[in-house]
Length: 309
Image (cartoon, rainbow, N blue to C red; front, side, top):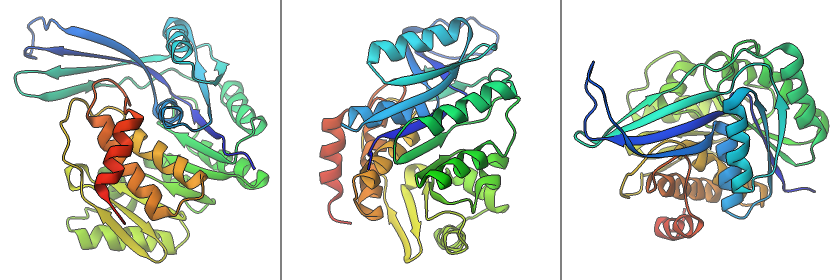
């Protein structure tokens, strides 16, 4: 068995983060403390898995000057990767923290157009790379069909590997019931998935539990912001409250949650224990600026704080 976690990021990004005294319309907003991080769902998952001591490989599609910068940033972090070159330009996302209001503004481009040859090369790369767990994460750029993750799940099924999916909308809906070990939507993404508002804890619990019992996925973890998160498995639903930590940045917190949860599942921990580690990693990520920057010592301390689950 290989505990290596292979991630696939069809639409990675270079995340640019900064802060400003005040963000105002029309007027020039001067920023400071700029930082550049490699980003995109699977990239973040691999980075956090590596920080927590796991073995990982990030498969990415990258092109243009921004793609070269993404490669440089990943090289500096020593993250194992396999890059599929594309003709289009990798996107760059911008996050600005308004110090006057403590509001965080995020600007996320849709990304490049990807050809069929390019996205099929990405699937082939995942098929060739060993690792018992596959994580498909993030949005699909233009040119990639909604059933892309269905094809990824088929690869996992043929090879006896476990697949985790973190996406939304039509690509998520298409992949349900195709042998997914875990999905991790946010509350808004989950409400879109089921097609109605879920305004009470009971409604959320029942909807998640029903999907699991119908075979949509073995496990469903729904992040609920300041309310914490829930985990649905066939035997029931577990809820954990959000940890009280100082918030310096939320970008990549969900990816950090997913990384820790998948890592612990790959190590044979129970879903409940993996869920608690996910909560700890998500909170640790919020404690630091930038994209998905939890530190292992913080994650371990927060996991002890949660206690027995």
